[in-house]
Image (tube, rainbow, N blue to C red; front, side, top):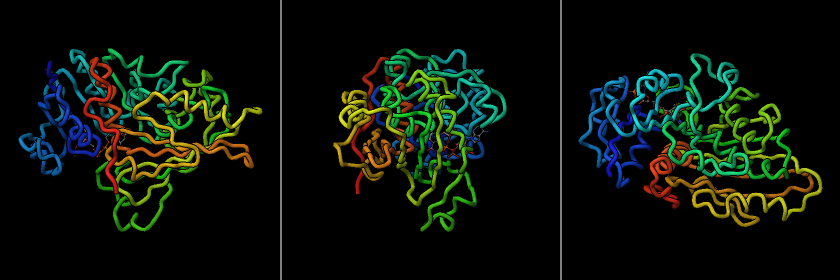
Length: 350
Ligand SMILES: NC(=O)c1ccc[n+]([C@@H]2O[C@H](COP(=O)([O-])OP(=O)(O)OC[C@H]3O[C@@H](n4cnc5c(N)ncnc54)[C@H](OP(=O)(O)O)[C@@H]3O)[C@@H](O)[C@H]2O)c1
């Protein structure tokens, strides 16, 4: 069977990456691409790397243009998806790359986003531990999927094994994360001009204000069985001059007198059988360059006895494992297709 697909936000970074991956998916026909200010223009004018889709023209994003497909991807600024998801009741599968359907707590939505609150959908991070099982079980046969925030899923995948096994203290997490400017989208922003970021590392949303914090707390609470209030995280993102990529360094206190082997076993047990989330051998740590273009999260784990903390360094491509790859991996699960279809474990290097 071939599934017809519409991709909204097709002129943007997340929409473009969804299209790049779908273009090599054998079960998918990309029928419709939509945008907003750039509607009416050829897709390749905005995504000149997508040569196989040169026949497509960006249409207006309306309920009518999105209706009538088997699958709709929404890759819109947060707060914009809800108006379309309400009108897509007849669409068999809808996947939102935005934040609108990620949070279960209305209070967290109000505090970090504001505007209308929409119901939470199945969270599109298949490898995440949730109450002793993996999130992929919830994604099988799901009809509505919320793809993750790129920073949020990186930090959650980094720490979920440790909090689930009870070997690290989720009440005192510190995470500092380097991210490329594509994580902030394609629209023109002065602070993202080349002159502002080249040769500079730029912190933003410092002091507990980043919108991905409630998403991390929600995911780690689900992994550990604790209430979100029991997850306390100091999270600081830093924009660095690489077009794509995330390198998250997260630490948390070691609980009790667990051995190094017991701590490492938490991550080995969680990810030993996974294709796209891989724990590196002891003493090895990932680089963002190793995951560019790949749907892979690479994790390095160190046990810092002097500080009595576990240190987890994780690299992902924000546009692949951080959003489009997660969306398509989740789509494959929802459709009953091989989970890794159209997704690569290999990066592009150097
Ligand atoms: N970038 C990432 O690494 C990343 C990772 C995870 C999740 N996400 C999420 O993905 C979503 C899209 O992010 P992005 O980085 O792709 O942003 P982006 O590059 O700025 O693209 C935004 C897209 O949405 C369209 N758009 C803007 N306003 C619209 C409206 N009112 N109605 C319909 N379409 C509208 C734009 O069309 P025009 O160009 O025609 O105006 C463009 O195609 C966001 O919710 C973001 O949080 C992004």
